[in-house]
Image (tube, rainbow, N blue to C red; front, side):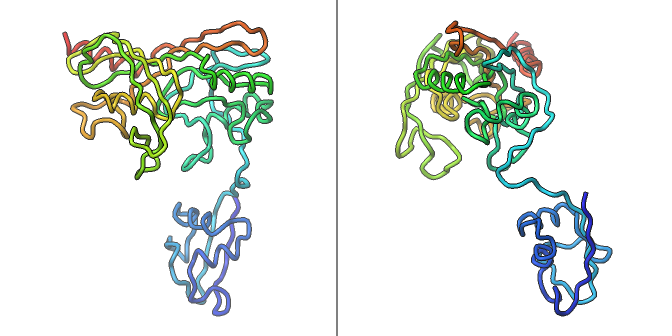
Length: 308
């Protein structure tokens, strides 16, 4: 980890901001990166940690200890464990854990599935988009379950086409609030970006797109219902928004769920249970399944005990 020491003079830094001084002295770091180093406690003026806007005085001694950031936009391999369900020369099928972001984005520059993929399967770095190597679909950060990744250009093109033509079949298991009266049903509200909150999805979008979600009741508890859910389309947050609009938000959903839930849950109760697609090489339809994770099994057991 690089270290540096500087002495402030009247002509160099005196009377100026700490972050501006260091951005000039450390050409490998941008001012924003310098501010992160300061905020993380990596900078001391004399014996004290100071804020980015601290006004320096002649004679101040500035000590810095920092990590050299990777070039912006470069995806680096990271040894993040992956549970591989199946792999061959064309595809990789994984069981994604909750909490793992699929690809880099706002607030998640590293530590993603994409970083893990190019560590364990370096060849996928050349497949598809540079920041989304081999990735043809995604799951939300807090959604667990089965995903497929392309390992060759042929597989990437085939799988993207299959998702567009809706010949990839997916089923999810979700626990929702309330007792769902109908044994099965379909939601067809078009979805798009929320007109005022751009990070959210809404049925009131200015340019909504078709979205269809089928559901089937698996079990009813005291105040929740376990559903098997099959999205026909693959819109962002589709299941979560459709269930919320229907008056049955997914349990543990921090965005579309209840503001105050009557009891605590470990996370969003949404799990991608099965995934079925046509193999890009053989033309055979393959189906893979991911069992309900232990944390969600524990929730079901608790709901069952409460209902008995």
